[in-house]
Amino acid sequence: MDLQTRKLNLISYLAQLQDENFLRKIENFILSKKQNDADLKPFTEDELIVRIKKSEEDFKSGKYKTLNDLEEISADW
Image 1 (cartoon, helix red, strand yellow):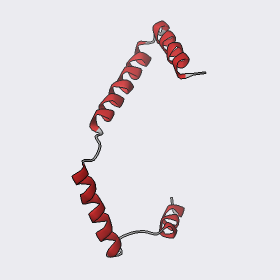
Image 2 (image 1 turned 120 degrees about the horizontal axis):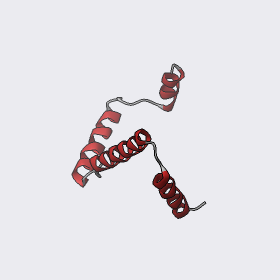
Image 3 (image 1 turned 120 degrees about the vertical axis):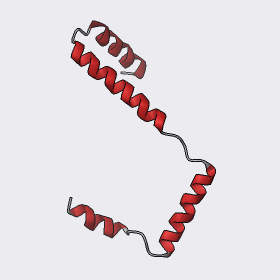
């Protein structure tokens, strides 16, 4: 089923929905999703440069974890 068909099916379902509580939950989910998306913004070039320099400094000073380190840590989860 393609995306357009799925959207139309969802619209049809919502149009027939009578459960006020469920509809409110859907609305709240959509509104919170929109807010979360609005909070996301791409890094500026300057921000990326600062992050890269910090990462390089951390690596040179030994402030990093290897794959083996991460696997050992995650084994305790």
